Image (cartoon, rainbow, N blue to C red; front, side, top):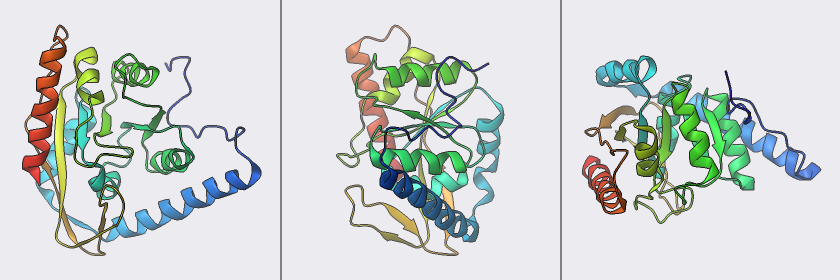
Amino acid sequence: MESSRQNPFIFSALDDYSFRQRIAIRAADITFSAFLFMLGMTLRWSGEDEAFLRSVDNQKPVILCIWHAGLLPSLFRFRRMQIVALTSKSFDGEYTARCLQRFGFGSVRGSSSRGGGAALLALEEQIEQGRSIAFTVDGPKGPARVVKPGACVLAKRSGAPIIPFSVELSSFWRLGSWDRMMVPKPFSKARLVFGPQIKVASDADDNIVSEKIAELQRALDSLD
């Protein structure tokens, strides 16, 4: 049973936006989703990660962590697995959330910059309901490749283990965005690469949490 919060798998209302903004959000959402789906269908994924994907789909919740640059291919690979992601409460975050939902993700809106924030509480509730969480740990606006604390704070509060991962692509473009986003070239080979699990004890103090953030930083750096 869902909590009193909005169901993260249902589009949020656009009442607070102007007519032009509502049109822009819907157009961006549909265009980007269609593009990503068509591109994703051409990717040739390695079979090595199938067992792990099944474990994420069927076992206890985990907190998946990746750099923002690897968002596009991972979004397609983890589609329809009922994973919940954090998206910003910005105009861009609105169509990003809708795109995620079209691929079977849930979307919680907000910021993870504060350990006691409402967004982390909502993500903790999703874990309690048996759902895994996805974090682009340097998002939504950087700095690139610097881990923010939200994933480790959530791991402490929920008990769910963190799993760092990256996406290897045989051929891709780099955007000129802050994160140097990877856009796979059609028919590229792709594979998920996972690091070791990171657990944060429920009684961890601030120093230990900081150590875990540094551990996650090293793990993600080593996967590239």
